[in-house]
Length: 327
Image 1 (cartoon, helix red, strand yellow):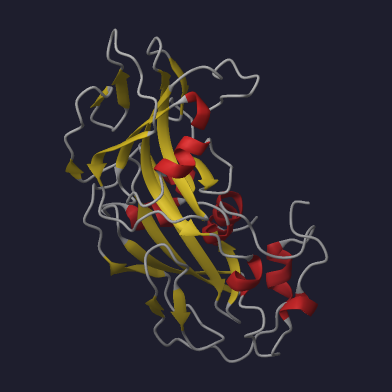
Image 2 (cartoon, rainbow, N blue to C red):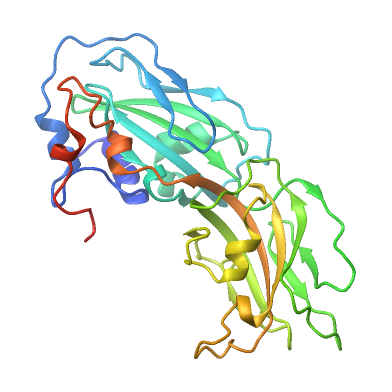
């Protein structure tokens, strides 16, 4: 039976897009790597929020004692038992620096703050932490030293309240951040895109081409009826690349330059929504309330695994898989 670390690796592999050739087992690959005299020197962690961390340590690394430390503390809301938690995670095999898993290839992982969801070690590490914290975990199992960096992301908007312009829909929020939207009665919808921050987060601005992770509620202006939401129980946030047509034009335009951590009200006219399509929303002005939880540029597999920088001086084009994962 696989021991405790296997649960951590399973969490990483299940919660993020896994690196490596198609059809191969990461655990099998790890077991095939040669070992030599290990190092127990400290692991140094650097890098900005929203980017994969840079780890500096002597290889092969020996986890003399499993444990965790805070790279930097968070200043946001504390994580709460039983409530959702959003995490960016990056893990390396300490023997040779190979990336085991990275959410920066795709999008952050959405979990419940519980030992069942996170595994006992990660759960214990996150207890008492706040949004914005970066943690370093060191584990070993079966000769595999795992060096894991975890960033705690917000699960709802937080920041300075902004007074909305008159004539726009009003938004109320429950304690957990769930918004409810009221559309003005007997008022004609605006003909142009309206972008109104309601809560101004302190994170970096969203840029074209970034993967944005968001929670949102969407209603029709015509009758105030909700037609979509990610706030219902068991629903994960949505992640999409902004500015390339994955979202309706109103969101593509309106989310650019908003700050991470913000809540933004967008009133989207039909021409920037579903106008000209066969959707039953084609003639509707749409109202979105969007909480921006994360934004980062997608890191390719080659960049994450550091191909071309290893001991063998590998060739990124030669070493790349013939077909991208998932095709």
